[in-house]
Image (cartoon, rainbow, N blue to C red; front, side, top):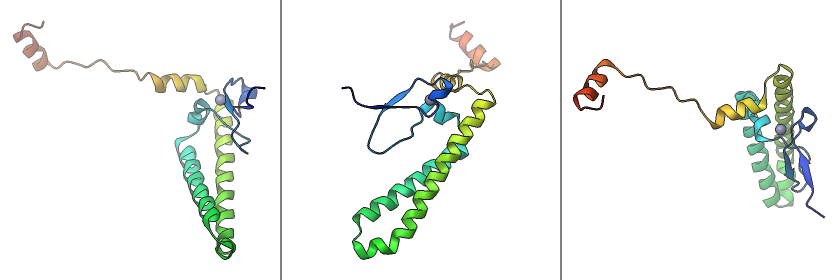
Length: 133
Ligand SMILES: [Zn+2]
């Protein structure tokens, strides 16, 4: 049997990306859809996620007494990461409803358009003097 894979959260919107299921992760979104979110929203999510993971690691390392002390803080950090995730999903959904295309944004990111350099008069004259034009 092949390893279990999970769909991008926007599978219903025609996204074909799948990911290997790792542990208890139940929701995944692909890079294209992630980048569709407002930068402020994705930044807030990354920050909340980092914080939650930090708290969870601290909880794992802690002894029984310390665990009781930090339990509330760990719980709050995890909850805000979950809220930030919901916000991210909602933001991407809104962008899709407004007709934003994840694919277009991804393509734009991969191949940035390079503006042709505009030559100044002096550059042009210098090139001519060197016999390049
Ligand atoms: Zn996707």
